[in-house]
Image: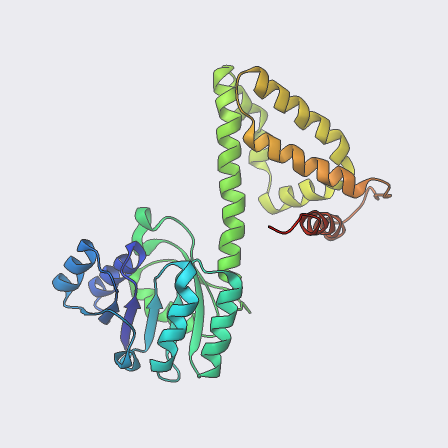
Length: 295
């Protein structure tokens, strides 16, 4: 089984090294402007280096694209004419979901199997052991081929190209949002000498089942948005009084204010479902977006 890699940045080099270490047949790589680490890698491992995609790709059963997201679609289009029908094209980039879907459609038209691969973590820390989330008609074949690397590969059941990268971006919103919130909250807690007591006060959150907790937050959000907005305003004032700039809390306040306006005049049932609550919130977010003047 022949494997090629397009792009020898950090991700490309990581997987190139892991594939060679695992004894897999990585023979070709593409990099138009190879860095010193890339040049060292291809010399040490005996990998043929090309400056662009070409007919040599026809001997590859699997092609891994590890370029940047903004050029992922154009790179895929330049590779597809050279791939043999039945080959797997695995896009490891953080491309736009629409670009993933478009590339997958064009691959399908040529009989090429496409995989949207989301790297779910920091490649610098775990290397090829970093969990991968895969979607597309070539996902199972890719997972089987990369199994010798020892990483955790999850194939999305009924997942379509674009789903994996969308989930990665959604996870990023959640985790990076939590990170920013933790920074804002803990700086005040530490300065007030209350960090340990704050953790004690969050024990109910720690013990909650995360999906149930998130559903509860969304469902009760539309019921109590106005009252909770006042709590957020008080928290913002406390941060400002302590000399901190409440960047995250300001965004939280804006979200609660938008929700307050969305439910104003509505009769909200105490037993509103998560789906019903989300429909209200989706409508308010879209209205807010569409009301903004074009850039």
